[in-house]
Amino acid sequence: MKPTIMAALAASLWTLASAASAQHVVLARHAEKADASRDPVLSEAGTLRAQALAATFGADGPDLVLVSPLQRTALTAAPTAAAFGAPVRAFALDGGVDAHVAAIVAEIAAQPEDAVILVVGHSNTVPLIARALGVEAADMPECEYDRLTRVDLTASVPHADVVRYGAATTC
Image 1 (cartoon, rainbow, N blue to C red):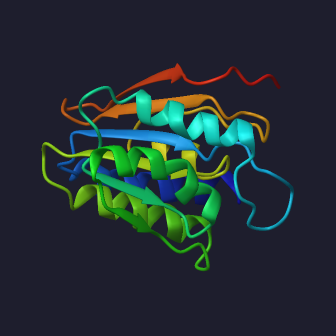
Image 2 (image 1 turned 180 degrees about the vertical axis):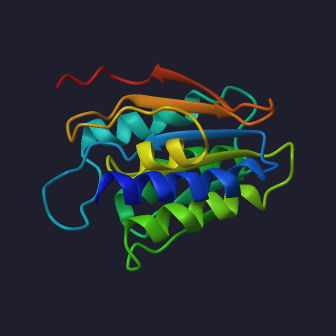
Image 3 (image 1 turned 90 degrees about the horizontal axis):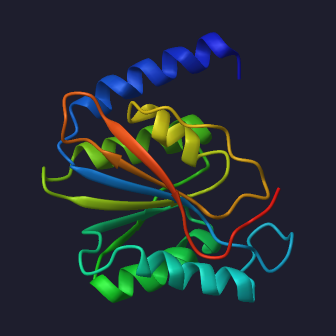
């Protein structure tokens, strides 16, 4: 995608995101895949990472979990959703990455001001969602699974902290 088109998309999504009342958004990439097929399950390492993701929330888990329709995102989110009784909503990819990101950001914007939302996405969507929420985010290499971005939307200017969780990944 051309940089000017991407900048325009980010600006329009930021306008939508700044109207968001959701207070905290946690962004994670799906955990390690079992194989390179189109819609794989998680590997053993991925299953362990999914459990580690749930543990990052402590006693206060998400109110809502947003995923793509691919099972690796739902499987990564499943331990967290189960531990906290959070509903899981899948957002289509068939309209393209831009439409997927816009739908996720719109759902975040529709949530109550005290909501905590977990978004489990992909290496190409997680940074775009972070940027659409108004925070800087580095591109994510295909080999990176341990990045967790916590976005705080409570201030007039969104703020993000990036932490690592589970077993370290090396790229």
